[in-house]
Amino acid sequence: MDDPDELAPAVRSILSAARDRADARAGAIVSVAPRDLSAAFERAAADGRVPLIAEVKPTSPTTEGAREDDPVALAEGMVAGGAAALSVLTEPEHFGGRVETLERVRDAVDVPVLRKDFVVEEAQLDAAESDVVLLIARFVGNDLADLLAAARERGFQVLVEVHDRSELERALDAGATTIGVNNRDLAELVVDLGTFESVAPHVPDGVTLIAESGIGSPADVRRMRAAGADALLVGSAIMDGDVEANTRDLVRAEAGDGGASGESDTTDATETPT
Image (tube, rainbow, N blue to C red; front, side, top):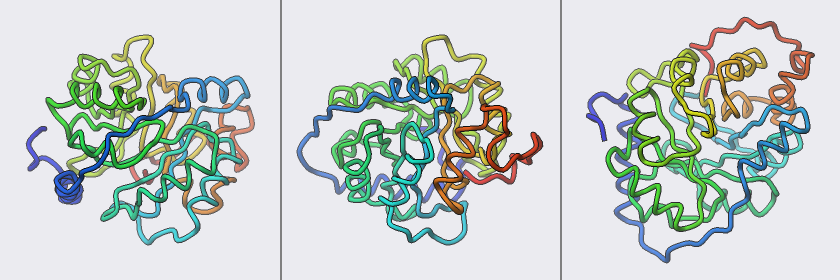
């Protein structure tokens, strides 16, 4: 991976913990029959909804406090609000996630579920069955192609996360077909929706493109969609309050009513949570 000294302290801590968990991981290789993420996005669009991955995230290094509600109830609320898919944190030390939560949520819903964790070793792929797994290009470096292939051999669909054009090129060279652009800088943890806007024009046709981080309002949704996002991944902005209403507000952003809150098109993305 890139020089760890260029990462924010919180991110270095997350990466260190991920390596420790990878060293301790041993078990049988999983085999997954995944729910189709692309088909879920297509169904949402056909229904007039913005394709949205809503994230069950108890806490994070960039938010205050923790959400103690039953994660299954939260997940069901997000689906009722129109989420095309879900993301579930399984990183325990910094995000309060658990593999057991992922398993419970996936049993309770019928939409695709992304396992949101920080995979740095192949053995970590076998921690749980999910429909989609996340690989962060900056974290896995030159191992991206091998990890992508290993994930696909197990049946997983793979979301490869990038932050700039060089990482995008590496993801494409590795064979990624679903790419997420994270608007949060890993060095300063500052959010800038312009990150997606700078990377998106260089993504070739046929690649599913997802905007991640900093999306907190219908105006943000419309901005990312106008820049080329096929779908969005939203965490804190949905978890803060009524998850069903928050999800519905975002998936209806292109319905012509500005969402239930009737927000204006002006937001400060720099201060918007992930």
